[in-house]
Image (tube, rainbow, N blue to C red):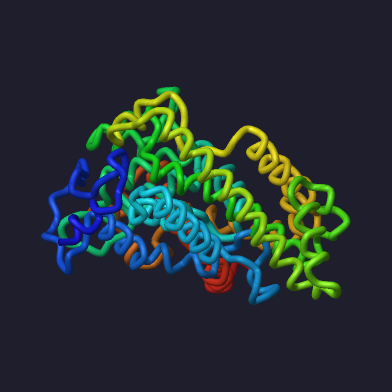
Length: 393
């Protein structure tokens, strides 16, 4: 019944759940007329790592305001855009939503500043990258089922997560976790992911530039005079001021974000529809085999998006008031990492074993990876709590 309903509105080149390439492990029978991709979405929503996103930094530390985005609210905004666009294009919105909900599970506490610290600490132990960490979470670290580690997601969802930044064209230095998944499922790493995955990936960019402009203006870190020259925003501000003679700053700030999203989404949908019409795809396989993305804005609009991204990097992400605050917050990550590497039994008891092997029997590299898994999974608040617990302050 559910599959019939799904197929009724999907394009022939969308990913149909009854044609999934399956999962690494055999799974239980689906209940409640759910599809395979709905099961993926539900497993992601109910996993521990997803709940922890509520207290992980997006840009601003979450103790500064109740209204700045956290990693969770960013994820929900990406998922909402992904679902809406996929539904409009008659793609599988359940699959796009699942990929969007999972895409940031691997972020450590304190945003990209926390990632930079862990990346440096893990240099001699295989490195750290939040996209790879997401894969470790959904295939190894979540422990909810007696039959397997991880969430046992479908090929299509894992393919979308692995290729968050597009195809992997170089076979050199492929992370172990990606090699492991590829060995089990043959992801064809050098090919594009599904159209649904491409939707989720571009929605990440659209969501964060809009909401970071919004948070930047709310915090007064950004000034109206600084952003009015940016593409699209100048026209949005002029239009808003024409409609309302006296514009409350909050309304203007929200209208800028709303209209930015609308501008990019409208262009993305229109341009993608032209690509579909031009190529006349007959299957999702043809989309994967194409040597270009099928979900994309036109060149001019994408250049506008990149200009806003560059502005945010220069004026916001590397702003001294942001970096100083995050550096203070992350200063104890190195201390905690070294402390636990020297005292691994001070990890919580449920971290003393990995795959039934005692942490004391693991080599230094494997111990470091386990400690990195533990620290990267922490929320900002829990990290600060554990610093006090370990007397690191």
